Length: 113
Image (cartoon, rainbow, N blue to C red; front, side, top):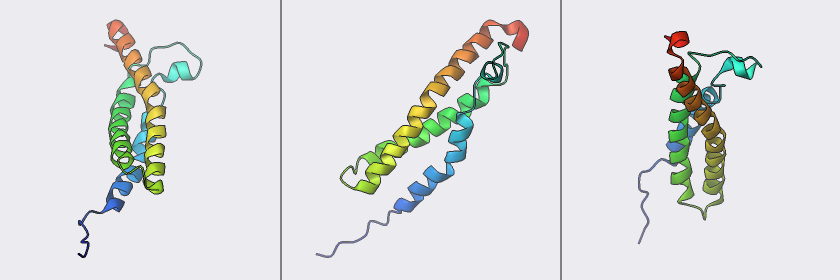
């Protein structure tokens, strides 16, 4: 029998991963810019964007790793899945730092209120 194409467009998924790269870069910003520069101040607006962009990029690249990892016998899909895992590994510590900074900001409402 003749195989029919399922109508899926794998390049659309790859395009989503490429278009999500700027979001991932924004998720890699420091949660507290003052600590990143060597100071010790409270950054009231730093953790919010990092949490927003970091979790959005984490969701996209985790889905990309899982969906491409299903086809581990195809080398291109395995490479894309590995790249998605690397992006996730870069994002997770930054999102955790942003959550920690947000909790510290919640403990000091007089400075961020």
